[in-house]
Length: 194
Image (cartoon, rainbow, N blue to C red; front, side, top):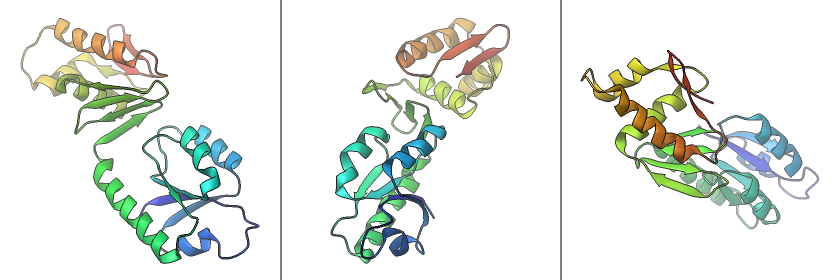
């Protein structure tokens, strides 16, 4: 079951979205866009798959939410139609979720080997080794990953030059330039993504 976020004025006349969707989904409701923004700032990496809101919030939500979040307009939809729409979106998200890794403004699609830097509107096609390195570092973000561990995973025990790994790391650093993520070497230990 996916968690959806609902933005609606609690003083709205008529049936409330929270009441319509509560039984079918795990729901987090917000009374104002400001409260939603506060929660977004506190979250690191995890975002909702779907936000249901009135059309009047669409432009502002598109600005503050990552591009991967689907914004669903609540205006004019029946409760059944809204439920079906949310279910369809969540089922697509569940299938795609395993291949999407996110850390701050960086999104990696491991299946398509695409790196996206949000805010810069830049997308890179990555060679397979760079995609694998970045996936490992995102999974271990904030922790040092030893050079020999990376080499073992990437080349399965095949002896490769240390310079080979350095070259891949150097190219990844260039692609991450301009994002809020840094790829640092820890002398004598390995690499860390911060």
